[in-house]
Length: 144
Length: 307
Image (cartoon, rainbow over all chains, first blue to last red; front, side, top):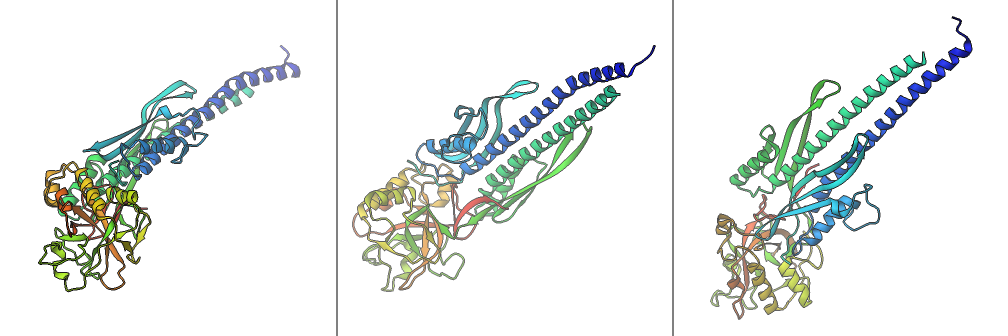
């Protein structure tokens, strides 16, 4: 059988198309996976930083203001509310803040993420109870 | 030929993905370990109160929170934790270790923005580390207008100072009623105070101050303990009776020589009518956020990570 230059070119094109069809989705998946891993990493760092900063805040009355500030620290990186969250899709209801008190005085503050859905290449994954950080309260305590 | 090239590329891409997964897992493990160690060190350093018991409590707390494999070093005002965190490389089929470490310290502040009662206690010896004040002794937050031993209106620890030249009764900072109340109840200062500042004050509003001090004491879950030792032994207090106050040098131009923690007396100690002083027990240094005194002799301390 005679192999012509033309049929060789056609075969190479077919092989390239086949390889391309496999390689591109794999590459896209790799990028998505890396982005997702980075997001989780950043979210974990944000929760940790927020818990540490919130534990140095002042506690007034029932601690409601401290809890809001702690949520803002995770959401926006600042104590005040801003317009754009640092993480796409992260909302206030995802950021849980718990303060442990003894005889009415704050002792520990915990922050974690609840029910945040992430779009990963392998499908959707929901973060429940993590990342989480707990720090001892080290701020000024006022009773009202 | 192209197919072979593509197959090779696919192997390389998969291998790179595997390594990326391993690296991100390792980074997550490292950051999680660091976070746990920092929380453990900060919790432990809050236990230090200048006593051998405090050092034991700090060590036990650090080991409980960081795990028994951690190496814990505790000094008078610092907790350092080191730990080797195992790292598993699934794709690379190997394992490694990451040496994580952190330290937390009780840091003295030179300038205090808020957290001080609006009173200043007289230092007995400004050159000594404890400023001449003795732990467990009762000193004057606010002097009576006419203090005299005969009238019995002198706080016990200051009785020896009565040589005819005693400080005027002073309230530092606020003059407004609501600010005075807030300053006493919540230690909210109207301006920062730093070591070396001149002591300036007003005559205040005595009945209002009296009531605010009593209210602060009643806000503590343990409002009955007669002294700091019983307060700690009972272990029910929430820290409202432990207040930070400035300590000033004697002389015609007094200035702030340092800060200290004072244990407020039971509410009845501030409610007596007439020309009575406000007294409080000196307990050492003030550690913000703690229900105990700090590790140093005097000072306003905050627990922070050491860089």
